[in-house]
Image (cartoon, rainbow, N blue to C red; front, side, top):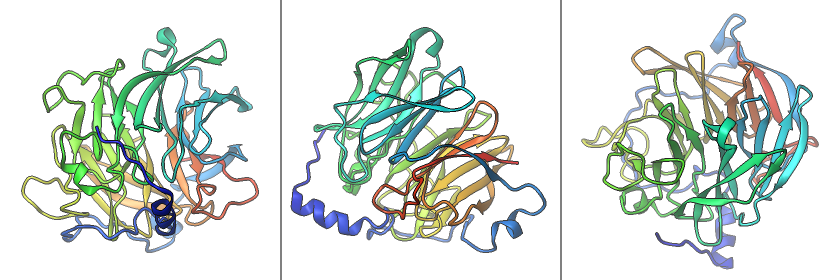
Length: 374
């Protein structure tokens, strides 16, 4: 796999362009969206009644770009910080914060660094945590054991994912099949998304040992789906269907229902294109109301955290696997929102991302908020 390196001059130019991930000129053939989730009425008018999520608690503050968030079987939460490579633990009913250590191989730059985290479905016996991170050579998935309150050394699981200053993907999620799914970005090189020999611009499916999972659509390949620009959210619904949130460029951010072997169109299409052989998204947003990152599923609904849009989106999923009725909440109240996860008690945890170089941090940012979704 190719290595991506960026010199100081180019990095400076990119910094000027990074007001939002959705502000680059794409190659696109946009068509009319099936469901367009634009801003519109305020949340109270959109949702009606008391069926409105609200922030009920702050479990952590003073964090630095919390990116990954996953819960252990005992209810403790593992959190990664993108720009310093730290792994944190929030434990017990008081959510006591502990520093478990730094993954020293992490090399943060731009949108890259220590990104997603996932807990092994067999954690009670194997004690394994999985991390997606950027090194000098690549983006990669590594594992480490967490036992007796200590985080062990990392072991490479899958290497050779292209790395770059932008569009590094980074979300990890174990599926109901016990395999690990990972989202990758095309690092600002759109052609990688259509190249089945590259791991960039894909959703990958591997065994916990890093091998292509049985039943993958392309022989001896970890690729599950392709044609992605920069997927940063993965979530499975109650029927085992995989959903992904994806950054657009100029016009349309996307929510996609993922099927093995399907081509989601980038860079030929941004948003809906109605092109043979390409899959249209289920929901599109204008880029100023979304820039979607984390994604979670709870009680028949998807929850999507928006960065540039600075709001939390709720999308209903019906029995046929169709996404409907997007509604937005918390608009502008907490700034950029990065990751949303379902906690063991049935509430949502939501991270802010105001110290990522693009936000306006408050004194107590970054935070992890608890959302009562009902």
